[in-house]
Length: 492
Ligand SMILES: Nc1ncnc2c1ncn2[C@@H]1O[C@H](COP(=O)(O)OP(=O)(O)OP(=O)(O)O)[C@@H](O)[C@H]1O
Ligand SMILES: [Mg+2]
Image (cartoon, rainbow, N blue to C red; front, side, top):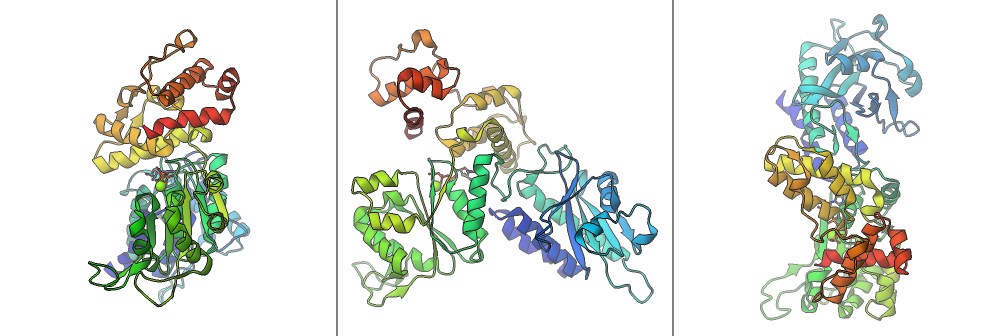
């Protein structure tokens, strides 16, 4: 029994990563089917919004999602009643509904199905079922041991679900909500679906990808998502932060050095390129790479060739390369601060991560709930709720620091609210005092011009009821200019 239970342990390694949730469920099902010698295993999830049962069947690509009302069939019965179903011959059971079989072309003969709940208690989140196994000598298909075993697996899957973003909106509410196709990445806005699509496609290849977007939009998150969903997922993911690399260290950091390469080099040290072998090398903030070091990088990207500092042999890199920047690379190229040839190598595939504000209010709320759950678990706070007045404050803010700023706000609110109820009083007070048309020009003297400009623009946006396009018209500048000025706050 214990060896049978260890079978889901591998899932644990996937739970903390930005893995495709379908892939996670598929892996779980494959393991369960093997362990029970069943022809098929399925995890049905109860969709909290529609109340339906949803399953993904990776083995049937033409049917990416199977949806049945929870009022039908044996799985529906388990979802409704929370009771186990064990039937050796489904044709004799009136509750059996053959319509799913007709859709999938599968013939169900026998079924064992158990509910999936948080820690085996509370509302049903899903149903774990196995179908068809060769009967034993006495003609029975499933026995008590199988039933106990499947229940134990369902407990594991329930625990796994609770650690993913495929979770209930509220702990006491029914079902689960799909917050996005990748684990730990929340967002269902159209803006983000473009990103998901590109991330999914990029993950299928080894192409160099450039992730662009303002600070805190999630470039690092999506870089990891590309890696963990690629064929290199079991290899290392190695990050090089180009902002913190002094020129003198760039080479040895990236390429390593031989013993005796310089004073103090008393042994050979591999560089990040070598460490990323078989995996992915993530060059974060590549726009900040010192110009003198860019040539070496070009050679790496172009020929996958490099030498350790002090070494003679040319080595070949086996790392997939991802890059990210919040900089305007085109401008850097024009100003001669970024090599044009490197620029073209870096931006083979571009993925632009949209600002948080552009994704809409619903996304801000979903992310806020996600972070509230996450930090409540981390700090041992009760299951959190966010009051309407807090949601209003979140909706009114323009998020110059994007998702990272929101994450910080919510983390601090969770800490400051031991009851778990987050209200406006737990959120930071945005420092600028409310200003309306009448005193928009009351910006005090003594401010740096940048700051004064930003406050003035903020006041203009407020007096336009939050409408940036209208504020831009009033100020006689483009909407982008306004966006840029408002974003400056993140640097303070
Ligand atoms: N869609 C998302 N769902 C859940 N968490 C997110 C999402 N996007 C970003 N985050 C979280 O927000 C924080 C900032 O994300 P990340 O570090 O990837 O941003 P970035 O674009 O790399 O920012 P910077 O340019 O400042 O490095 C991280 O803690 C990350 O986990
Ligand atoms: Mg980053």
